[in-house]
Amino acid sequence: MDDWRYEHLREDVRRLQKELNEVERRTWKVEHWQSLQPLRIWMAIFWLLIVAMWAVAIADAAGAL
Image 1 (cartoon, one colour):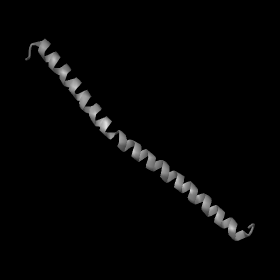
Image 2 (tube, rainbow, N blue to C red):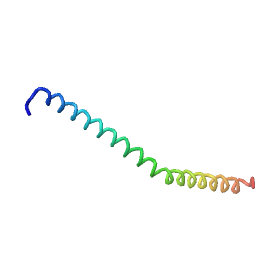
Image 3 (cartoon, rainbow, N blue to C red):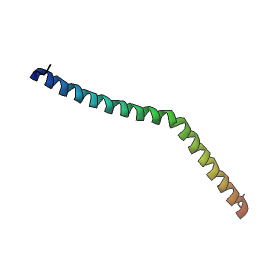
Image 4 (cartoon, one colour):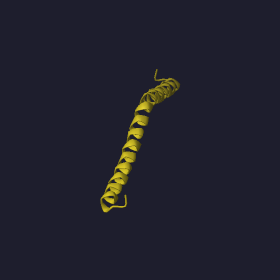
């Protein structure tokens, strides 16, 4: 098995394993980002409601309403 042809194949296998690990890592990042998307949307809506309530409270205190 210590033939020069197998050494070339070992390098190819190492390179492919490295590429596979990188692809799996990127896939995990995308899946993680997508799984948190509904939470991000609800948090944005929540913060917009808070800002709207503050605006109404300030307008009410200033007598604009």
